[in-house]
Image (cartoon, rainbow, N blue to C red; front, side, top):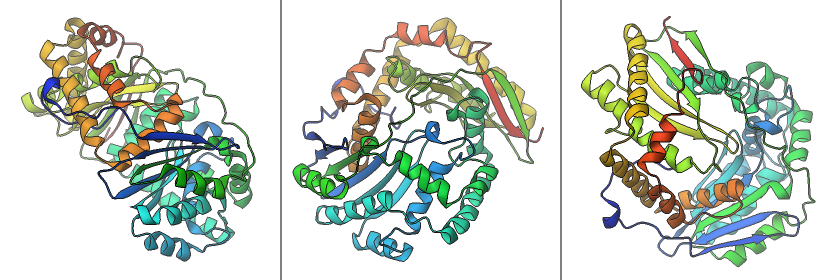
Length: 426
């Protein structure tokens, strides 16, 4: 859903309404362009999104999407790594990339006068990476260090372990970074073959939000990517099946870091808003039941919370916390008691209203950012094929009833539908 915050009642909020300036164009080759003009800012946030995920990685090449995102910044057929850095600095803004389970994207944030230069750089990175053998060898060491960095941070690593435990036979259960063995096995041929397979204009979505001219962006993108021929579509989504079980990893840590997961919902599921409300009531904020009982009343944890991790076809709803080793079992038991109480009683009217307000205010605050609105355009296009107006989201939040939350609470964290992962000095 959206970042969390606190606020006042619905009637006194100034909430974002619609997306009145959103415009959409589709090039003849299938590349999609969605923009939103914002009169109140002087900057522009640009995103070049590639609809490629772990489902598209071939056996033995796990982690190739993430590695490719690293490699695009190491040089293209027309720019060296230094020239890429200089081009990024010359627009005076930010240029970077990101890989997730279901998408890879490159983004830039700059001023209106530098939009064409930023688009030229982003498309050069995506379409023309050199993938030189020497650069690949060096970057393997960087990615291996990145993997070690995550494994040395159990509060981060535990979330990857939860996915691997809950969905062991599905691509979404794998780490975005891949394994050490998989990374070391990659070579230039793998990268170029994979790029050719996924570099399809039908997979590319360009989004922009800020002080911009839609027609001009369409013209620039058409000149840069219009000649691309249609390519291979993404592999179909197949929903994973949740595997219940418990995994404990021994590490010399001062705390036990753990996640307790159950079946959630995908982005397209109608109950996404109910999950968002349930999340805030159970563990999504300082007034939530878990925070109040386990941290404030008992002092058993510094961090405890819940979250919904959604993908297109499925999701996981999880509680995560850190506890002293001798109190780990007690904290897990207390989580179970709070879940059971919510399943038996449902939410109070005050909890329900507070959660609705938190979600609406969070959306209102996030909508002030051009970067958020650029991402909103892209994720809506990729997940739903249309831009969700903010007032539609708010209506979905307000439609959640106490009966909805009660019914959902009765289904989550069933005894035979939980996956527990923990890292600590067992």
